[in-house]
Amino acid sequence: MLGVTFGRGNTVEEVLNYLRRSAMADGTRPSGTIYFMWNKDVRSSTRDKCFPAIAAQINAGRRARRS
Image: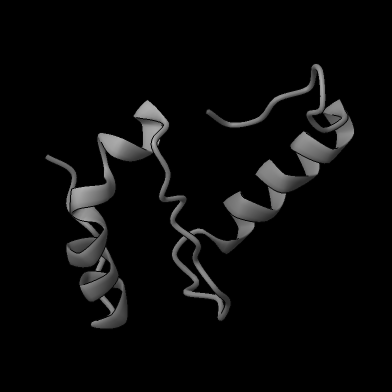
C-alpha cells in the first residue's frame, strides 16, 4: 500500500509528498529508524517470521532480496 486518503488516512497532498520524498531518498541510504509492525493482523503475521533476517540484512548494509 502506498497511501490511504480516506477515513483516518492522510490528505492526497501528504501522500504525494511522502512518495516524492521516498523517491528522492531511494538508494541514498538516509539515516533513520525503520519500524516493523508486529501484531496479530494478517499483514503482520504473514511477514513477522522474516523480521529478524530483514533486520540483519539492513544492519549489515545490504538490501533485502525479494523471494
